[in-house]
Length: 235
Ligand code: G3P
Ligand code: MG
Image (cartoon, rainbow, N blue to C red; front, side):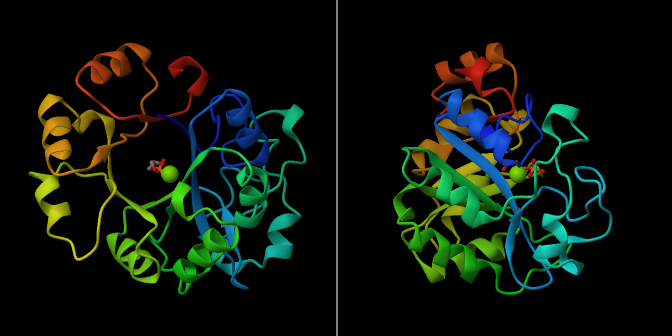
């Protein structure tokens, strides 16, 4: 499964509708994106909690209203042909993909700011769009995942790992909710990692790998998919 990281982010500004449309055109199997929450409680798509890297604004998303964010340009930093791209809302994205077969990997960004109530809004949106069976919610904040699973145990849960834990499959099995997939940094993955995760019943979708040679080798070892900036190359 080829999952486009922040959309087709090698070719368009990350986490914009342009990047998501391109990922669809490239026939990606899935799209990964990052979720933050505005001051007035809207769920929006942006990797950083701060605006200046990927927009012409500055300051924290949690201190801005949706109206304020929607006035920002989220495309020019990447290239002039993308000028006018906006920070998308979760709803806008789900509207684009709800009639496709795409797997959607929604990553909750709870760190370093805690977004009160974001899990409820995400779960309600997934349910409203009828996408429970096609979504994986992931986070480095596993408390957010516990809350998501409590709200709807049918939603797929993916554990993100940025540190190299010892036997993370055992950690996953000890959690009080069901885990669908493991999402480690790609450098943690080897034959044992894949085999042990499979033994415990978890798919493995590492991030962010852009080398087709690496992916081919891992696929031979049984890797289930990859989160990549170059879905076209990996396909
Ligand atoms: O979900 C995989 C990957 O996106 C996690 O790291 O920082 O790119 O959101 P990051
Ligand atoms: Mg992410």
